Image (tube, rainbow, N blue to C red):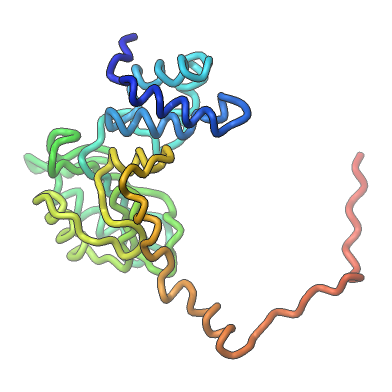
Length: 240
């Protein structure tokens, strides 16, 4: 397997990742993000690279790469658009958003499918679309993510406008989180390398709606009663 696409700079980054862990194989998850930052997906060469760096078999690496949905087995576009279609977002319009974007990004009368790409993968303006399970923003649904950055309170119309801007080379500001980058750069950050983007951590991470309850409690002096030190605890069933 030719792994020459992963040059000396990537080998050095791999070594830095491995050095974070007492056991080398624990570095596999960020290592997979690292190889994905190079090719835009986890290829067979990427699997072989991880296996060689971590002294694992390719079967062991493949088992992990195929288990987690964030590791893509086909090349992604410049941007990955993830639409939440779990229960609450779906009921609020997530299904309609996903259907709208499928039609918008499709071709020849055929809607774009899950994890399919409009345009040549990796080229400017190319977009990979996926429906995602819960994105943990139910209070702001329906939501979508672009390269894992949040765009809250979406409608089919606003999502369609967002995607058109991405296709035209624009990078609209997310509702929360870091300034928008591309999929490969986001993957490099997930591997733990920010390289000139240290300020990304300064972006807003919580919405007004999410922290409203905590703010009200603080303003009104509300506190939950503390648990007494001698509070009786229920008996545990005897293990057999």
